[in-house]
Length: 157
Image (cartoon, rainbow, N blue to C red; front, side, top):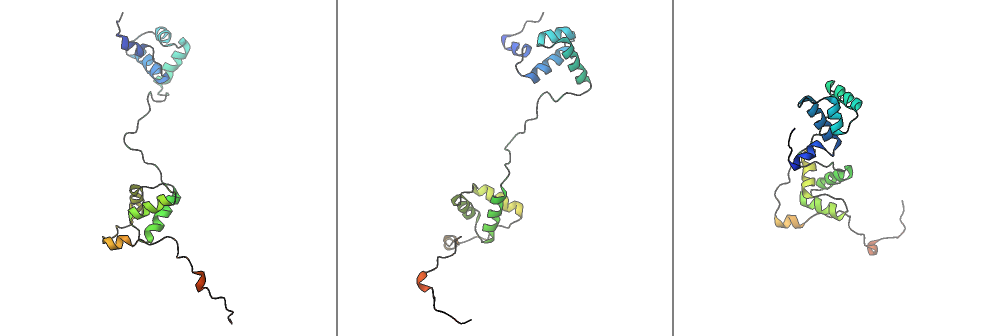
């Protein structure tokens, strides 16, 4: 008989089905317990455990644990954001100017996202601008027409 520490009881009565399957198969193949003993210990019927062993031998079981992707996960960028970024860049706006315009327009995009989109599109960096040039950011909307300058006199065509 094996004396188990209190924390070790979680291995004998696993709560997750995949861990239960792993521990049962480990007890059968490594500890060489009988299939009826393993079935009783881990809550399987004898026949269902025999099927589990047969499937394990044929390598017909899903993995015990799923692979965990480490690190930051990339989030796909919406096509509308990508198109807006490229349109604004064609107007000569910087990464920060583009990000500001998108935020004001209700599209979620950080300057890092804008930079990534431009890099993937093969856009070159803008040349260094002076403080005066940075202050002259082109406007998105065309200038408003002055109604006083409107000429409604009839013309000949």
